[in-house]
Image 1 (cartoon, helix red, strand yellow):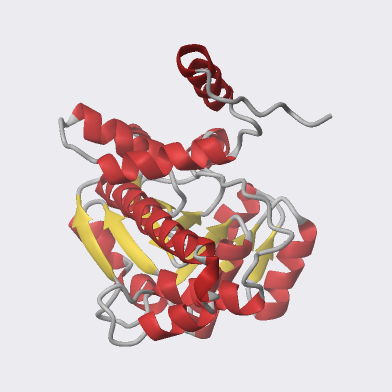
Image 2 (cartoon, helix red, strand yellow):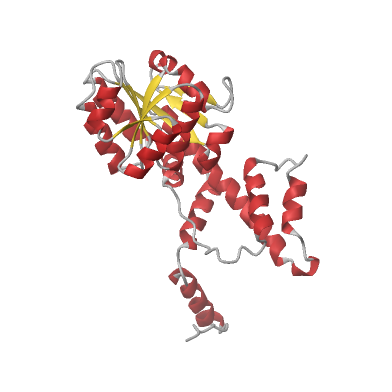
Length: 303
């Protein structure tokens, strides 16, 4: 099957390469000429404009958008919608808010265009390991792309699925990322406690390796934890500053809207926010209050 890949960042480029290895024809476009040339070297057919992308595909055209969520995705889909013909398909494989995906599906349908939202997980390992794909959209349109999804997935019958109507794919991916926040925080806290138990002089990489086999807490995240600790158990040179993609926040907002308790995911998000503060004001105020009511010592900031 022919398909265009719009956006050749690390994940987009790897997905395009996996499709090429699976025998698909890929038209590749990015704002960076070097990435287009790299895709061409891998076997893709390069395009230098969105107009060229549309021209190089035979109808019904399938265009996979793999660009950062937000305004860039909005503008790209809008531009494509004014170039494509009724019956063509736009696939959003980025981390869009599911509410935006529901709106986009409705707007595109008014132009006779189809829309599929694909929550995509796999990161930089997807080229070799395959991608987990959570797919929202019309069943008939999704089925047309079965060969694409089977090629991108770890196995033809594993790691991907049509989960519901437009928006549902990105909704499930949003919850996936919220769960990921909680898992990562639990590992971080557990290894942090072991690191602090200096009298045992624990080899944290060894512990991670023990847990990886037979343990109920084994997972891919634990595999990655082991790899990170093998390189440097002190994680020297890494700043304790943790970004969030936005989906963790959306998951917390959704839990509130649905009156569903989600304390672990919420706390893990709050911990990420805290990591970005040097000398948080809230902690300073706590120290000041303890000094006020109990005369407890306050440590002064070193000059």
